[in-house]
Length: 81
Length: 272
Ligand SMILES: [Zn+2]
Image (cartoon, rainbow over all chains, first blue to last red; front, side, top):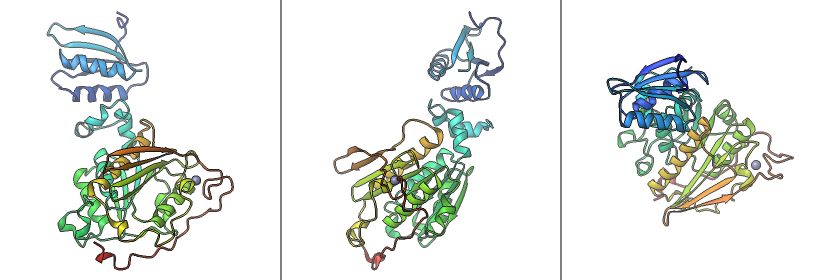
């Protein structure tokens, strides 16, 4: 996918952080980055990955990559919009 | 500048997740200074909501002390506050909700000689006063200082609000040139009010303050919002700046705040 090869500028592991605090932390990490920078999130399967992806996309950020990891959690690469 | 503790992120989480506010909006709220004029029926809910929302510095002005007849609507005060300064009582209620903010209680009357110092440097002023001279004084000072203002007024079951961006939207004097002649409204009927109606309006004003500070949405500018809680009708009356406004028009007559004489209610304490 388009995110391949691009190293994230920041990372946050949100595994075990429920809704809506996972979204709060995702927004907090993005707020600390400049536009165009990339944040990698590790986030739980199910509602967390779906809700956070949708909310961030709705706020103008680009979900560059969604990849499910071996343990079932997801890695998201998000470019700050 | 974007530094929040985990506890702060928790405290404000429900508004940080709003697209229109977010972390940046929360940081703006924390940096902002708001003046709440009046710690009564409008000022009480507004003060509590703005404190809860994390407005960084709030000045709250009221010259009165808490009376038992206030408690039906002035929800920042409790029965044990009777006899205490309203500004102090409200400040304590605000800090009880949110000890992170700075609150400055000011037990003083709004006058032409202190109003400019009170409104200058504020990001927003919220009019929670209960008399026409104070409303005109606040409007005049805010327009002269260039400070955004939420006007609010309630009577009985009715309320009205408008937000004023000086030099950009209609001011209170564009709509209401001068106070009604003293005695035009009976001073006792001026006091009739359902507590929840004051709460509705003060809450609308608090929402306008948050929107203005964070840049969220569209303000009640060039609009007079009027509601009647008996029928729950809400009406929007379109307004426009008036070229002949004595304050913000082309040739302003008012260039400094002025005290407007106003008779006190004879025996206000005896009013029902
Ligand atoms: Zn005007």
